[in-house]
Image (cartoon, rainbow, N blue to C red; front, side, top):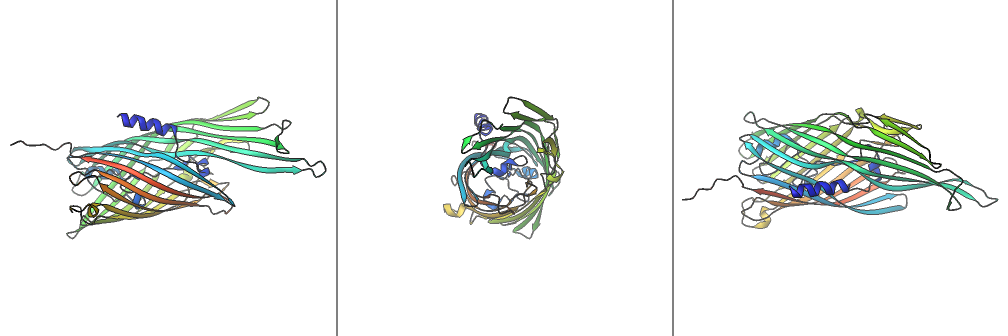
Length: 424
């Protein structure tokens, strides 16, 4: 509990990104992947294992081992390079990725609870434009727009998975989301490189405290094929709805005047759905493919359009993500350590959910690899290590290209707390 409180406080203070693209929509969307699938491109909807917690499909909770209490914690270190034209900038960030715990309540019913970021916002950049040059006097006039934003949405949740029939499992995550949303634009005029006192500057700010609920549902159906193979079908659905939180717009003028506008219900989260399939052979390898879709084009977000503060969906578009990956474990019961290690590979492709200046935002490509390292031969606890390369490529060459290299480290405590010992 102390660890949970400390990490929640840490997450509230840091947002884990410097991306200029986090200015759009609700910020950068955080994938719900965990230690076991970060190295597999985030594929998860058809994955089902009694020793793992899989938030992306809550139906998987019904498979939790009856003897175990599972605690999963993960963090990441991200190195980013932003490039536009001949300019480039490098940044470094750390972030808490997830906290998740779970155990079986009774036969066929698994219970979990945890914390996970939903979005992150953090940027600080500027643009400079010339207004005029007086060739007689030699005076030049220009202005600089400074863009600053911070915030992000976090989620705490409880989940339940139930196996009502022999092969069919259903589940749900019930979450509470909260966070801050702050965007600040400052415009400053300069003459001959010095701030012009004769020209009035401009400052605009959008500020909101966001809180609401979040509901996600899942279903899984494993099919045995022969003696050594299992194919599992999975599907999920997320409820879209309005967020009952106001957004405030402040327009500051240099002479001290300030105007304020408020939109009572300025934000929405989208309906989402997805499907996935996995194929498991013996206890050696498993591969899978997921396709998920989010209906962001039906959602509103506050924007300043023609000097009016409005909540509109014209900055959004639907988002589709395709992920594929797999893992291989040579011999789960081997005396040789390297044969008990789980090796993973994956890739994903994601379309943007926001528009940049009316055009489609950058598309995302990723490649990933990882391993799960057993703590010891008699323990089922694991250390998960993954590497990801994520590239954001805009359709407009004048926009920023972003390359991210991410190191993920997670620990899965999986111990047999509920085993009954007998003394003879």
